[in-house]
Length: 254
Image 1 (cartoon, rainbow, N blue to C red):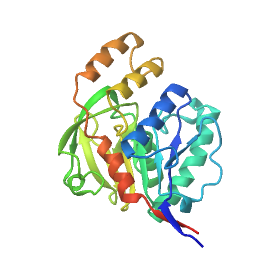
Image 2: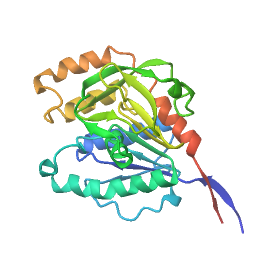
Image 3: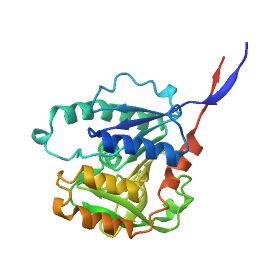
């Protein structure tokens, strides 16, 4: 019997209802992670239920961002958002319990933070655009952040963030307006408030798609895009590359 060895795929969980933003996110994670459509599979949770996920089938789970905020009052959440939270939070809880590979981008701070008991609220929201990120001492030593300089620019924009982390959680990065820009739980579960999958074209796509979602006055969209292109954002994708390199898990197929 012939045996072939390859890597189990990564799974991207998407909460973006808009095709343009969802597809751009998927392509960006593939590109910066060095994956193809076989190596990065996707579930769009706005279109289908999560279903049963056997974590043994995947090298790691990547959670994309989007317009949902876990800290919003339940009465303000629509049925899709409530369903997604009901499905995601137990899955992330299992990931934390087993210390499995997880990378949550933006929405990961709210979801992973909720699971571990962090304080998630709107104290440290940030406008859409580039922010200057500074690694902590632990961040400079972390195997996923090792390719980043101590200070770098990244794209983001969020309404909620983590105000207080539990003592056992490792803070990895901060910015002037948001003290928790990245953290790690255990050895293998990560969340970033900024978007490691975004380059200048990507942030401009997000600005166009989400101009009426309350992140900024719609009439400022073109100004925000010009400002975003003036910043040199090149380092954050290294996080995706390292995550894939570190956690790609060989699977025997007999």
